[in-house]
Length: 55
Image 1 (cartoon, rainbow, N blue to C red):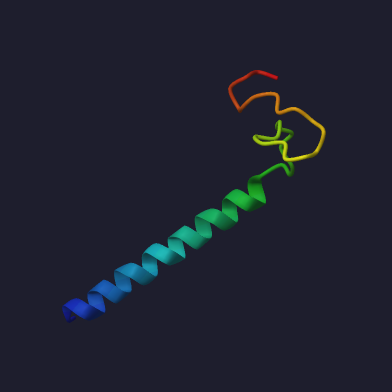
Image 2 (image 1 turned 60 degrees about the vertical axis):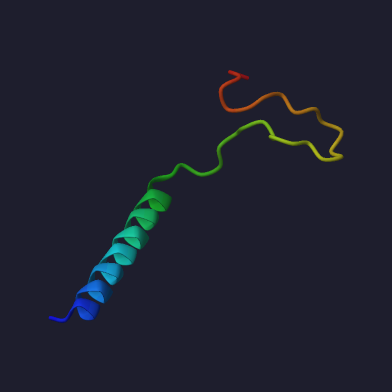
């Protein structure tokens, strides 16, 4: 194999693996995660903290 063909094969395998992992993660997720909004732009609701705030 030439270097260009090897590079293309490795690149294709990387993106295929990436797509498979994203698909598996999406199928395994349990839906919507209830989290406070990071920025409450004009919603009348104050942001209550980030992911680590425990709220």
